[in-house]
Image 1 (tube, helix red, strand yellow):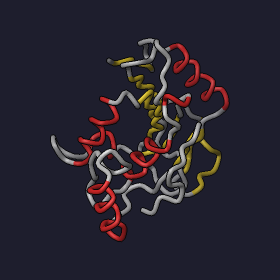
Image 2 (tube, rainbow, N blue to C red):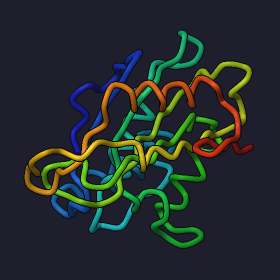
Image 3 (cartoon, rainbow, N blue to C red):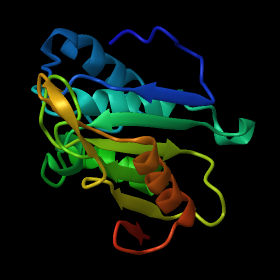
Image 4 (cartoon, rainbow, N blue to C red):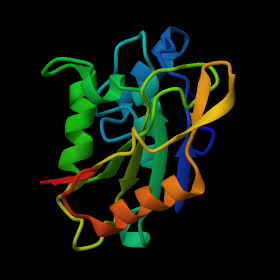
Length: 188
């Protein structure tokens, strides 16, 4: 929970945090920081103790270079929990509310299942941007890349699929196109 880059922000941030990992060991320091800095990394809500993914998401959102300095972008790989966990007023929902109301979520890309060695769970890449282009401001793009994969000849643990360069090009074209279609939806 210690901020190893306190006071620093970055043009680009990336993270692939562990899914469903308990953050009880860091609870005291995270809650203390949340109380002391309501606009800080963890001041917008705390997720269930059983899954700390959204702590990583909140951390990255605060590590992007401020908009008045040119802005920053972040990419993070998460499972489904950060999309759906929590009820109204609970930590996960409050974090999502803050990210959306602050217009930080640029796009969420659904990846194929079986993409990672240690899990077959559905995964998503969240793209955050605090300096969106005029076209993208006030909007979130959802891209479905879940059927864009090639099967591996031989599985590696749970990993039995990969995204080829052709698939990456398709996903990038959907992102750049920023229109509604079979694999892309744009929402206010």
